[in-house]
Image (cartoon, rainbow, N blue to C red; front, side, top):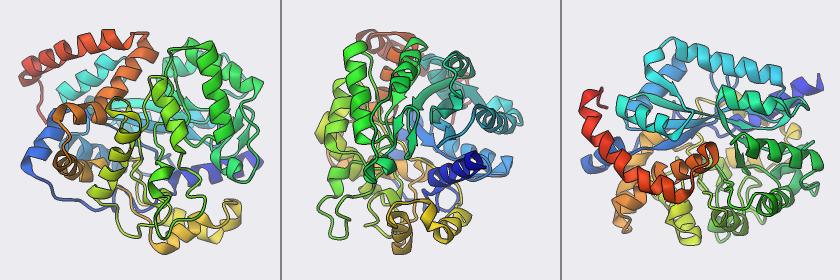
Length: 413
């Protein structure tokens, strides 16, 4: 029963990125920006579990069709969160794959970076599996090898609460950050062994810094990342900001460490995490502000995007308001909802407009190509395939030329 309650709460906390993909606003953009997004490899994020974020396979089909039509190449897709078990993880995987099996020609499960390029060429959706918890191992490190074979490409050690690996951000806010545990170190060892990217999103600062110390000491040169984390420093001066900010946001020093490792940080366009200070749908300018903040902080080579897309979450919001004590966040999330911060900037609906905004700020096409997907692919190649960055960067221009040469042979978006 405790596991079931924990799973329900964890999934709801993943899903609380509120009125999102199906209900989010579409922003107008120039024809040039729309074409640029079509022509560029774009990797976003879908953190929407079956049963809470979506319940009908048709919802996924509509969402991915809209993404493909608007030039989104692929998504890091969350299969697990909170204290999910191995068995529930497999159930989640089944429902995603069963939905995709209804339209097999539209999806390509990614094993190598070349698969992302192939999906882009062929107009398919690149599927990059992510787990926001290590509890799916059920205490068995050998399962990491199976995760590799299933195609899980990144994993978070601790999601909000305290786990065998360490503490998440909500536990840390409540003064219960136990740091990286010996078990957590063993999990990292296996992740590095099998080329699974260490994701520090939603991880308590002590646990995250311990994990970064462990990586730097034992695996120098292997990057780690924040796949969907908002810069806390951007909102410190907002008039309506809470003293501590949202517990999901990360301090600048953690972003800087991730960049120094060779990794990337990707802000999520999820409004309730923005300290509840923006009560309307997130605008392209506000999304561009986050990207620009990180570029100025850690450099254009270490920034990505992660819209953290969801579906309609009205039932989640209603549940959260009726069971606020289960979240133990001092009422932060409910207060953000009450302010109206329930928007989500779905990439398919907002990215072209973000492009116009970033162009106006002086960003080049090369800069945007890095931010929208290139930086992620460089890190993927290094961790998944053991390719040094310089090798990937030497290959990438040639691979792009090949893509352009052969693009006419495939279905064009």
